[in-house]
Length: 378
Image (cartoon, rainbow, N blue to C red):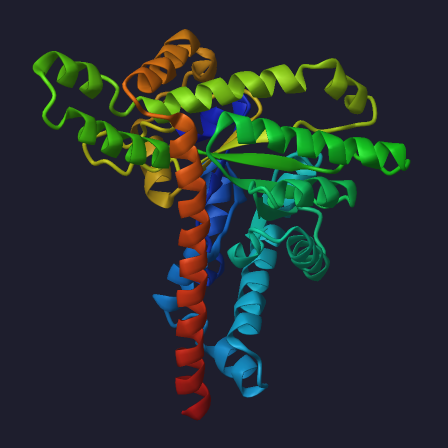
């Protein structure tokens, strides 16, 4: 029997997390099978994921009816549903957390995207989720917005595990790493333990190509054949190049004297987590954002479709992330040369990411309100 490529990733130092969670997945034993059979060691969630799980099924009707009859608001019902699912998934993954000494086995829950521009409100909600879930293998997802970065530092300083999300640019990634290290240093200065404090930095991948490819397509309109070929050559190259440069900064920061001093107190690396790794363009290979991003101290969070594809035909090269770095720099330089500003691209993607999650949350709350009315009145 051929080895399972997913299970081989652990030897490379890469963890595989799912980016989907649902009550059915938990209660049917599906998540447990992925953990046991494929070496899945974590789960992430966001409002878009919960919207699909709650709106597309009737699995949550009983809880919606019960809480609705008690006068709970749609927002309170959503939080209760999310906390129940996240807690149940965390319990399934607790053996992974214990086996890895607190370095893996995490489940993430996201603060409301409507708080993306509010530092204090983000901190308050993160504290509440952390307290309500009361498990060591929970991570609170906080976006890497201007308001989110100081929240990340303060939450880390308070001993809360943070999954920093919606990172698209290398510059913002540096800020995320710095916020984590600042938080650790504040705890050390207060003689607080840091040996079980974990964090990941979710660096988004495929969405970069989606936008850059669209911009490149606009560039070739009316261009001569030479210019057209030059621009077309860059399609599907930006996202991986961006991620490889980010990983180089990860190795630099977490190989520094600054981090070494924190390691003396038991500090854990803040691992880069490759997010949005499903292939959006059907013309591209379905493991395009997995194969080249394998490397030590990383996480790849995959859709179930991507997990199935990589299990079937993924290519495992433990050092893939460190290869082709010069070419990655050249790709980014060439993009700038043809008029594609990566800063403009990543700024736009951050704004769109917050907007997308906010839209999903509002649609979810509206659907819960409608379902609540139907169930309570029935």
